[in-house]
Length: 617
Image 1 (tube, helix red, strand yellow):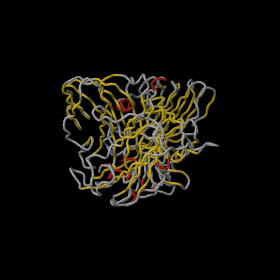
Image 2 (cartoon, helix red, strand yellow; image 1 turned 30 degrees about the vertical axis):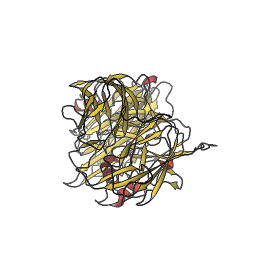
Image 3 (tube, helix red, strand yellow; image 1 turned 180 degrees about the vertical axis):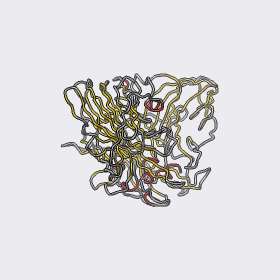
Image 4 (tube, one colour; image 1 turned 90 degrees about the vertical axis):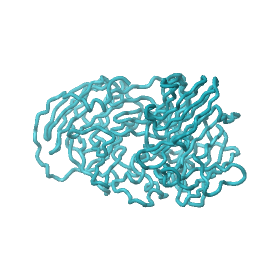
């Protein structure tokens, strides 16, 4: 996308409107309570072609969990005379509207810099600096249709994702609809507040539309609906947003200042898409199966019980609780899809049956624990304490019903999420949530088993991974790759290569393993044939590129698929051999190798997170 991002603009904004100081009384009055804004009701008053809007930034009490739960003192936007809101009041107007806004700083102790109240689509930077008690007026045309945001920055805020303390609560959605209006949609905005209290205590709140799971709203839909979302990252951290059970189609992407509708032939299907700081996306998806589903950030640290304002103590069983309101928290949205009237479950043929064991063995390398999913091969199951360097690769066939019997040999509960797979809700793998009504999937208790029913509607590269005690189990090895082939195809490891990246522990600095190895032997490839390379990133966090070099020159490969879905022809093209993957993403490429010496690297080639020599003969 052309032009500087909003993050760059925030660091180098220019003053557009002088502030006229005006002190407001009452700094010792009781703080108002923040209202969680579901982004359904636009703010202001329309008169002709002009929106009149009065905004204030005020100190307020925010309870992102229960209404009676723990509270924070934060800065938040409000319409004059109304409760403060997180996210801030929704600005939503048709293109061509003129916005006449008054902005007042009701904070007693902080200068604010307001960004985003400017004609959209021009790429122009802006900043409105208001000392305590000051107010100003600004008038501008709404500009180009799209999804945007506005925000207030307190003091000399440094926008650095490596800084733990965050105050990203004073921001709101700014939507410009095209002439004639937009189809019905929902707006989802993420806000984060965090503060280091002492050398060992950190307190934070992570919210979608002002609430943290399990207090986020339940989005409801019916089988066959067209669901349209605008998703806004109003935080300084990236968020790979993942939808369980379905694909969504990316319709538009924005960087906070510009928004670009993707051409019709260049709208990929995905199950995970990363919103970097202050970025936006518009997406559409159609639920074709009833049940409970999730939409959540796939950074493990953003969805575990430790993200609660009062996190559980070390050793707590919350991380392994059957109750989904306990074993998850943070940036999670629940979705309930109702069956369509007269809907009938499709008939399911005879299923292939596999047995998969959840195992723990002797620790190795840095990980305090070593776990793996081990597939039974032959008539007898694996020894109870045997694990492999990487969890078993599952090779399945499109359209073939497959029942996977998961046997838990750990001393703690387990659960498997079949990531990117279109399947029945009950088998999706979220204990206490997957399913519908009272028919909800159990956690797999020690010594017990669970049957996941899969019927794969498409060929591609997918993932399976733990959805219980996420950080510890994931960094101990409970993740693996899935390859789904077309009927009649056989997996040929000489031409079909999968690279599954994960962490070796929670210890710092982070060490990356690919296929369970940090120092792999050279990969031998046959020359002058086409090889398929399948890349998977399933660590708890981290966005990085896989790249292929010959000497110091990046070669070329052809992009094939994203998250298991074939790319549109306009995107399935040959180009530089670099694919960026965030957590929960897969990419497929093909490479026709000429004889020579190559190097496959993850991260910066000068100082890679992982590297492997590739010899083509």
